[in-house]
Each structure stands twice: as C-alpha cells, then as structure tokens.
Image 1 (cartoon, rainbow, N blue to C red):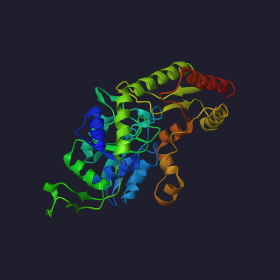
Image 2: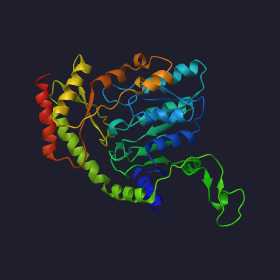
Image 3: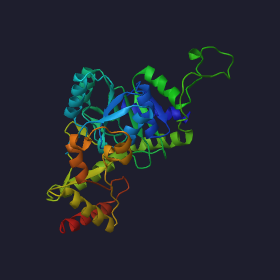
Length: 360
C-alpha cells in the first residue's frame, strides 16, 4: 500500500497520470526502454554527458546508443545535433532509431519542446532521463516529464531518496500496464486481464519481466521525503545563488548557463574552468580542492570514452563528432550542494576556490 501512495504523490507533483516505482534509476531506464518497444538491433540517440546507465539500458535490450553533442555552456543535449543525426540516418535509409533519450543534466530540464517537435517529425519516441530534475520547473510546468515517459532516481545523493529506488512517469495507460508487468516478472493478477480465472489465488506470467520491485519501507521513506521536497529545493536554490554571485566576476571559473525558460533543481552545481589548457587546469583545481578537504566530482566522463564502449560498442569516433561534450568534460567540476550545507560550508568552498585561483 505504501508503494501506491508514493507513486500517486510523485505523479501528482509532476502532473502526470501514472507512476511506477521501481528498484533503482537504472531499472527505471531499462523498463522505460522495453516499454517503448526498443529491442535488439534498434538504436537510440542520447547524450554522452550522463551516467553510463542511460546508454547501458539500451545495451541490456540488444540496442545501441548514438551520441548527440551537448551545449558546452549547459551540458544539455543539443537539439541541433539530435536533428543532424536523425536527418543523416533517415537520408541513409536507417530506420533503426526508435527513441531520443534526453537527460536533465544537473537538474536543468532539457529543451523539451524542440526535442518533442523533432521526435514527432521523425516519428521516434522522446524519453527523458530526469534522474536529476525532480523539483525543477520547465516554463510554466513541473520539470522532469516530457515525451512518452520519464525516469527518475532516488539514490541517496538525489533530490529525495528512498535509500535506493526509481520511478517511471507516463500519461499512457498501455505503457503503464507494460511497466507494471516488467517490474514484477511479467505477472498479472488483475481478474479482468487474465486469460482464465481458477480462483482468488490465481495469477499468470504473461510476459518475461524482472524482479525490479520497490519495497514498502522504501516507498514510505519516499512519501515522507516528498513532503520535504519544497524545502530541499528552496535550500538548493539558495546555495546555487550564493555560489553564482560569488563566482560571477571570476576570471578562472564560470557557472553553467541556466535557460530563462527553466528553473534547475540543482542536483549538481557544475563550474567550468576558463581559458586554454582547461584539462590541465581542471586537474590542478580538482586536486587542490581535495587537499582543502572539499568533496568534488567530475560529471561526467563521456560514455563513449569508457573502455567497454570503446572496445565493444562504438563504431565511430564520437570524440570528433561531439566537440561540445569534449570541451564541457575537460572543464567541468561539480561543487558540493546539499540541503544541510551551512553558510560556513559554502564559504569554505569559495575560500578554497579563491586560494587556488591565485595559483593558477
């Protein structure tokens, strides 16, 4: 019963009809791709600036990722690059592309409207990996949902947590039913959907699914966290504003661009290293911040650079085809941002950045 309550709470917040809670964010992607009909031999277009799961979930189904470039000022998938891939593949007679999978990088919604127009034009599905964007806004509506489905993660570092977990959101009842079956071994218990009915104990395995269920304890935590979401987002916005104000005149660091149409959920607070030799400078800054006891990370190493992808998956030089992603990756560092940060914590980070800048 707690699972259904949690699903209803998230669906109501985002403004969709259906939500399917699931074991984790990767399982959410796997389920969404399967429900969208992606299968062996198909292709998806996605971004390389994301956690590997966005591409991996396609591989689980025997499909293959193609990579659109990103805007080097935002880290978001670049609609013009998506269009270029769709156009080139269509001209070559390639009908394998079944979906565009955008990522709401760092908590900022992607360009949903432009991407949806492209998906409609080329008759492919739009799916949103919204693992970062619960609590964001896109124009006049909640961020985190567009296309036929979106997926979210409730890993401990996300905006809210269920310890580990995820969810898929949709307005399509047929996709909803397919997602329910996929997370529970393909088993159907609803009497009106059974091929026969031998008694109140009876159920049928009608498709091949997985044990991807969330448990009630996780869902109860998630519902509690959803009531705290507005406060979490408000604090993240305050921290982001403090960072942005302090860094706006820096010669060495700059913040990523936030679209006027969006409000980021600020799951991450990325900064970019200015100037030439960015990769070498980034390493110096990163290691110096570590020595100052500041917890930082790089988000992300482009997926196509991973050894497994280079050896087993990619068949072209995506580094040359994605200069924006290469540039963004070479400059990016994610600063600490979480609701319990104090102003003293923020000042510690900014003091360390200024100290390091003096030695760049």
